[in-house]
Image (cartoon, rainbow, N blue to C red; front, side, top):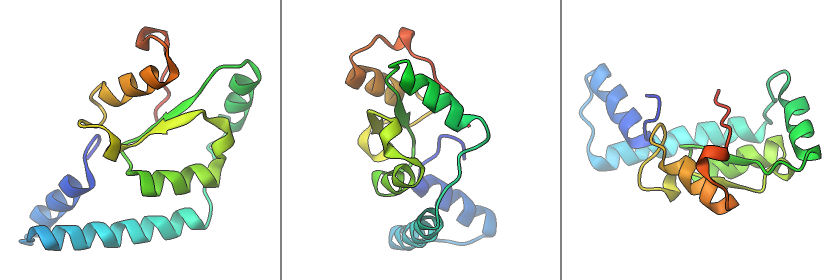
Length: 126
């Protein structure tokens, strides 16, 4: 489901499991999924090895950084609070753009908010 929406992911899993879900059923599963992920985020997130050093060096060098994610704002904010919102000048979330990653629109939106040319940006993905 890389680049997929929560709706698309739930529908894909339901199809795979042979379940027929109404739109309300899909919404219910999305709510359950978000509650579970939210609880996990509330317990705290750890940065991968080397990420803290990279963020520290970029911040010290005055390089503006943004998070671009397909995750909806309500969960992304929890993740940012857990890892340290202070590293970033902003973020672009999946529910704020018409098309999500891997489409370039979210990245272009972030570059626009930074006031820089997308060609001058560097992206790190997990």
